[in-house]
Length: 107
Image (cartoon, rainbow, N blue to C red):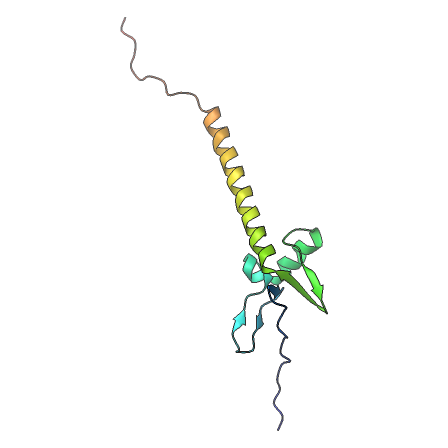
């Protein structure tokens, strides 16, 4: 009897990952681009349609992203978040008035 086996996904070129999770030759699950970004594959597809996220390229019929591009995207998002946080803190500190004295003046 023949087994119903899913076709195995060929590994991406060295330094790349596929957009979706896949199994390597040892049967281990390798995180794809979407999982490395912490989002679902459908969200990743929406990001690509809007031109967001790390760049990707077609290799055959599959979508692949360099691991270094994903790391660079993470670093870029982190620096954007930190700079917007710093700007928000500066705006709050700038808008605060100094504390007023609680002592009433002696007459």
